[in-house]
Image (tube, rainbow, N blue to C red):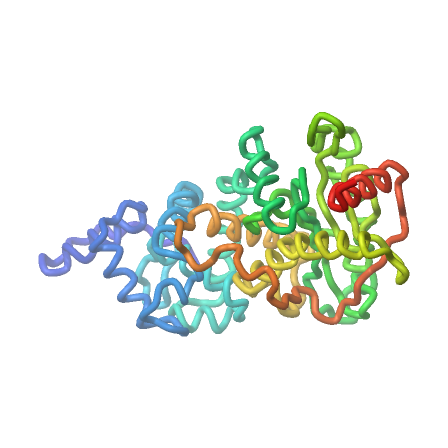
Length: 387
């Protein structure tokens, strides 16, 4: 849709207040009553539960307004968009449209029909929103920057099942795609399940927040291969990310993250013991690791539940843009957590619930074992046995 310019015609007195409200929304500075009127008008159009803001956008009004403030400069600096009836889209309208597209995964056509705009406008607004979040929201995904922050993460991990010095949990999930035979690159994206997919690797903290992500690799790659091709791997191997710290006067336990059987056992990545004939001590240790690792599984489940555009089979996506869509969904996932207030029902509780963010994909098994990683795991195991 072509850009719309400001209307310079004289306005009727009775319409003056309404049009000034529209202009204030475009600038992102609408007052509370104007914002409420905007929601009342939009809720009559869109599907879902029109009376409940949080069920419509999977976030509070406070979080929505914060996101608007993040993207305001980028989304109002260039082209302005309009509804089919010619009315300009406010900043709120554009953000709402993009969030519905990312949050529901509904088609461009169905989103456009519910908002009263053309499907091409839905596509353009959503991409503008993705660019804006990339530009202004990347600080919501970062490794802990202070000792105090990292200490708090360790404390929360230890509170789950007692693992000391744990700094994160790592897991992967597949973003599935529907590609046609006419796509020359289709075969490159066939994974071990026979589907087309792109893999997402995430390191998660105990609050289900993503601390490091890697995406863009074909789904046929193993978990260990994706890890070894990541910057996170290089930083950890070089000792720039996870360091040694004292557990008590007699022993030292390095900082580490935990993974499942699909990852290699490394000096900074602890995985469960493999084998059927395990001692009682090793079995108990495995249970601690698996229970703690649930934070990563739950985070990825929540990501796909909250941002359903990346949950189902995506119809012929642009594989160059898809990693950026995934990245932005991860940022939005973190923003919702960062903006949550004490008492919200979206806490970390219920880690024992059944989660499956990757249905149909069997558990990978990586047999790679680093000697120092084996020593650390044995040391941790002995820590719990009281020896």
